[in-house]
Length: 311
Ligand code: BDR
Ligand code: CA
Image 1 (cartoon, rainbow, N blue to C red):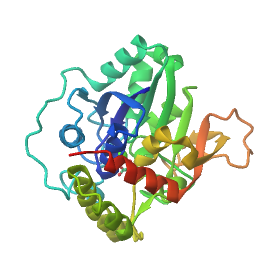
Image 2: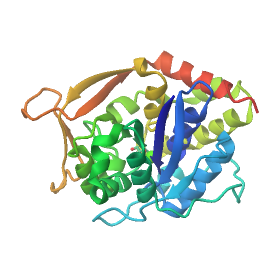
Image 3: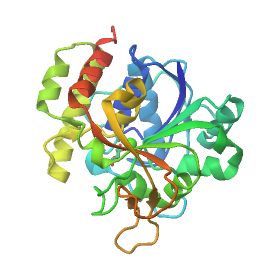
Image 4: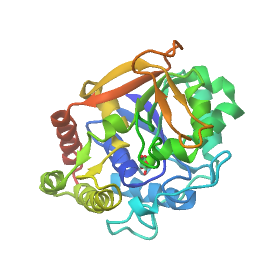
């Protein structure tokens, strides 16, 4: 069993990531789900997190709402990819069965990590605002974090030519996290674009026929369409789900241990992650950088996870 906190902005691929983490094949014990402004406003992301908890049967997992804005920059959302609600596609109950806890996400992260034996893994799949704020407010959490397994960045961008959405939304926060010294495993666009869900994927998952697989199929149909329309891609990359897939089966991915720095000053490159794959900067490597995945294994894991839901 591995204790984790999912810090997210659900979001189609965030939702799928949560569903993998909650599945019967997962060794993860979800300590909390915390939300951040990202794909849509934080209140909507929180509502969606609560709805996903209902779908995945996470009745006892606390959901805490976090930052409403990036540290310095104006808020930017990705409605064109995730729709107005942030989770467009499946029919969703308007009222989830539980409510968010009163505690702020940043306080909850600090409390859980400080009370731990250094065995909590953080899984950020949105902008890094909450994680940076937690590190600033209580630096003593940094040596106690087991691992940060995040989705963000890459050697190219999707929101600008240089920057990926999660890093671009709050590059100052990303800089704090990447320079913190905590162990980071990074799933950037180089590898998440290899996790491309297509119509074929949808057909395969539709055969599973339980209520979670139906929910995921409805998510994917919408997400594939918007990724085709906006980015001209051949499918929908389930970016965030790479993080939890890795924690379930690390052998799916190949890594390089490299230096990654976050650009916060560039006129055209704000939010870029400079990934030193050739070892030219002579700075201490700070990131376990995923660059390749085994597609057959990933989709098999995905299928097994969904099959495990019995209702
Ligand atoms: C990231 O941006 C969001 O829209 C997705 O949920 C993912 O976390 C991909 O760039
Ligand atoms: Ca996300």
